[in-house]
Amino acid sequence: MWVCSTLWRVRTPGRLWRRLLPASGCHGPAASYYSASAEPARVPALVYGHHGDPAKVVEMTVLKSRKMSPERWESWKPEETQGGCGCVQHTKPPATKELCSGLKNLELAAVGGSDVLVKMLAAPINPSDINMIQGNYGLLPELPAVGGNEGVAQVVAVGSSVTRLKPGDWVIPATAGLGTWRTEAVFSEEALIQVPNDIPLESAATLGVNPCTAYRMLMDFEQLQPGDSVIQNASNSGVGQAVIQIAAALDLRTINVVRDRPDIQKLTDRLKSLGAEHVITEEELRRPEMKNLFKDMPQPRLALNCVGGKSSTELLRHLARGGTMVTYGGMAKQPVIASVSLLIFKDLKLRGFWLSQWKKDHSPDQFKELILTLCDLIRQGQLTAPACSQVPLQDYQRALEASMKPFVSSKQILTM
Image (cartoon, rainbow, N blue to C red; front, side, top):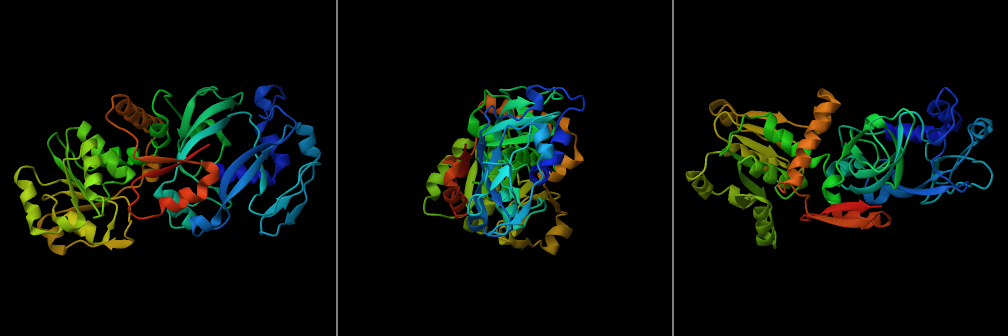
């Protein structure tokens, strides 16, 4: 995983040059540090060294890059010390000192071979990012790790072996765990997917997770036809908003369940402006009058569950015979409870979906095709980014706290 690889290289500077420089010994832009100055470049990043409350364990870290010859790197023998915060430090060459407080200095890798130096433009804070920091996710990077799994960056420089990317291109991560909450990074060419730079920045920054999840769930579990209906909870989430828009583009009808709140009418109006046909609260979903909804529309064959608990049980109750409920989240932190009678007499199916697993089961070209399909929808005005609040990277604490508050429909996006 590139986050782990980058931090591993921090601790092994001698190996760094052997690994990244071309074997031919050629010199040039691809074989040099990206910094044009002898002075270290400051590269802020949000790093966590252990799992816990994101507001407490995530710290602003300064990655440093220094233009230095391979020979000097080879001759430098670092001394490991233990800092007051418990982090492993290395004594660097003269004029560079370690800070062991809220800020820690690490080295950013050089660009060579198949490496790509990127400048991050924007990166969202997703629920999966929070879960990963808390240690409650199916994919956990080696610590310390840079936070963030999604975002959009611009290519600054490429190594001599890079063929698909060039400076100026926009790219997004091809896999989770790269660590996007930073201003600059060095990744492998294979870890990045080029996206068009004629789509809105917020759409590009939020393209790789939620819309992909929404599209695959709509396409992969039931053979839905125009006019069929879909029911979902957490409808104001990033995935929920993408489901509404993609379903509308496919001529599917949606029943969208949300939690009751003081501004419910405002939320209802916004979701309907995206293409939602019905917006109901969890309480309304449980009422007997709910059956009247299906007098003028078919019962849904597909239910999308991001909550669990009682909410998922209600989704099942309204599914058509032989229908499928796909669970992709568990916001209520409660198990899915399925009625035995529903399973027996309605032959309902319970499935799960995780985008990271889908990527493992499919080729990079298939994921790129998915991304380009979504970009087409964006260009046609059929898919927009969720409601977003842009927050400067240095104000990350405010963004983390806002992302964990209930009834916040605006996605926090860190800007660099």
